[in-house]
Image (cartoon, rainbow, N blue to C red; front, side):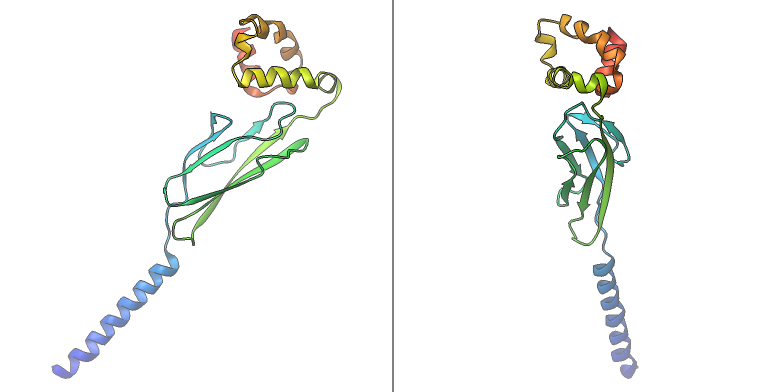
Length: 170
């Protein structure tokens, strides 16, 4: 019986060692997002959304918070937009430094042509004022009403939230 104890203990130690090594190699920590906001608007924490940018947008502010507070987040594609489709990537690396996930969103920078190109400065002014909620102080709500016809006639030149505001309230 004594002769069997040492080999059995060695086998148990070997199995436990392999288990610990396997756990270290395959360790997975959460790489999910609990919050995803772009320019103060919430989006799906799974990614995949398509976002129409206001004309003339040069950069966006991304608030991406991982589920695991020890995970790290790397953001690329949040500035330097070209006309058309741009990809915003958010990479979450788990606290184990082994697991990671990439969340992608498509950002659409409108093409400047025709009316949009001729009025690019006005569009940028109205969009910026709307985003900063200053448009309500320009004087009062009359400012949005002043531009409502142009926004309705040229919806493709303006951001989705501004167009929705006009469609709903003006």
